[in-house]
Image (cartoon, rainbow, N blue to C red; front, top):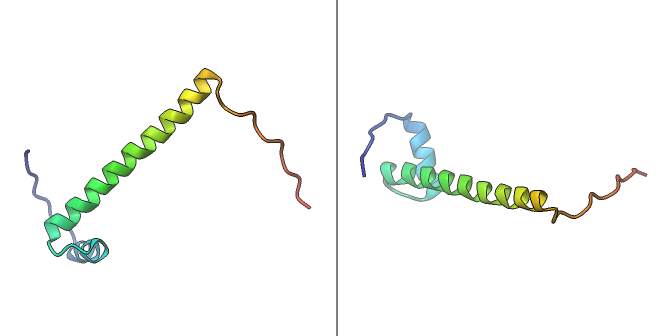
Length: 69
């Protein structure tokens, strides 16, 4: 896999290291990036599931509006 070198603000990297509990700056930032990508894929999967139900008519009818009181 190709590698990319980037420069980041040291305070940002230290915060990432603390939040992830990873002692290496490279590994800490990589952990955050991988997590961000995984979350994006999970969101895409959930959105696709909802869209599929809408296209096939499997969605429940909308609930009637609630009037406060």
